[in-house]
Length: 143
Ligand SMILES: [Zn+2]
Image (cartoon, rainbow, N blue to C red; front, side, top):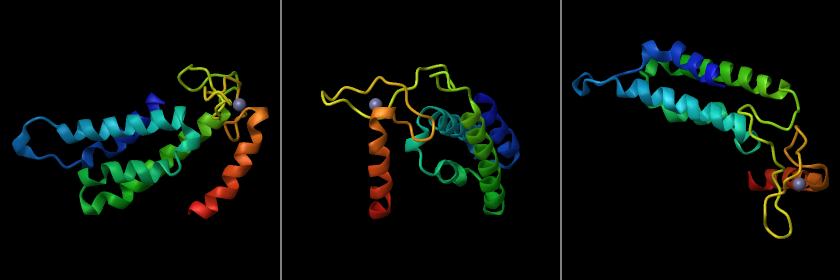
């Protein structure tokens, strides 16, 4: 995942606006950190991260001139699509991209997180699949 955030940063680095009076390239640092945290979130919390490209773009667009905005959005979209594809193809060995064990998104009746292995397409274990369906029904209402 580190590779994807670096790639986005490298493609955009030349266009980042810096305030010369500050001396240090603080905005470069901010853009890099924002890319890293977006990719980390995509890797660990994909099912709750609804619009990753839009979110990252909103986080970093202020560091770019108006003339670069469209390109920034396209670069972000391209790499986040690649990252998403990469995550989908990861072997289902029960670990996320960082090697942490995957867990079902549901809680047990006692309120503790469900420890069972989730299915890749919705993040719920087989006994909590019905929650994914409820979610699908609720989503249009919320929107
Ligand atoms: Zn479960």
